[in-house]
Image 1 (cartoon, rainbow, N blue to C red):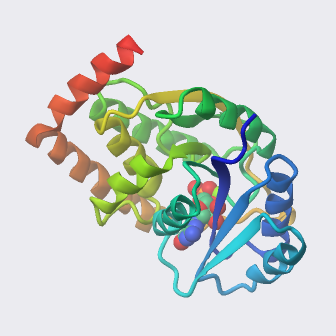
Image 2 (image 1 turned 180 degrees about the horizontal axis):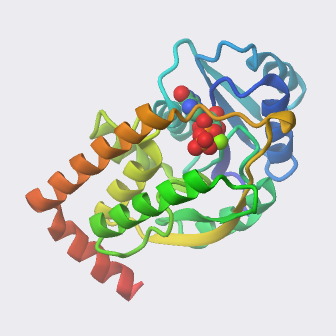
Length: 255
Ligand SMILES: Nc1nc2c(ncn2[C@@H]2O[C@H](COP(=O)(O)OP(=O)(O)O)[C@@H](O)[C@H]2O)c(=O)[nH]1
Ligand SMILES: [Mg+2]
């Protein structure tokens, strides 16, 4: 497989030094180029990965002075990766929830179809909290409506391979999609822009606190952010996006 065009990009915010280091090591065991965007973290978690980058020459750590959110961190990483000559990035969470052993298969799917967004379809274990699974069903339904039912199996799972140029283009056109609204919004906007969608299964784990599990999802704040996101997307859909939805659906049927 040609590895020169693709990198692994890991946005991280206060993940905890040991957990972040474990995720980065797992990714490096699967793929040569791994970049971490440390997003204004205040927990010293950058120290370990910065030290590792002294000996792992294809590990790069970008440090953002202030916390800007997952979407802003991915955009900064994507722009730097494009400038360095990469065309695609597999984005994965820093906190150990995503399966590093699926990196190879996802990269292969992306190389087979470089125009596509390769999306993970999460396979949950019995430890997944019911409240998160229920909340997810609502997001899945809304995104089906916003995309005419085609393409995006799971709008919230962040284990994905992005075509960088198209992704940077859609993100620069909106000032939203910078925090937890990033994963659903970027997928819907890429779909509206005509990007083919490919879905592959991938395990999603929920780690206990003892295993270093952390989440910064704030139930009220981030659910309100989701309500606002879908309000914006549905208004935009009604104002004329339905034309691109029709085109994209016909396109995805032909593909
Ligand atoms: N760069 C950046 N990444 C973030 C931020 N908030 C969350 N993340 C990352 O996004 C991923 C998912 O966040 P998490 O809090 O685990 O959300 P959950 O998995 O939905 O509970 C993790 O890799 C986090 O490190 C942020 O403000 N900035
Ligand atoms: Mg998480």
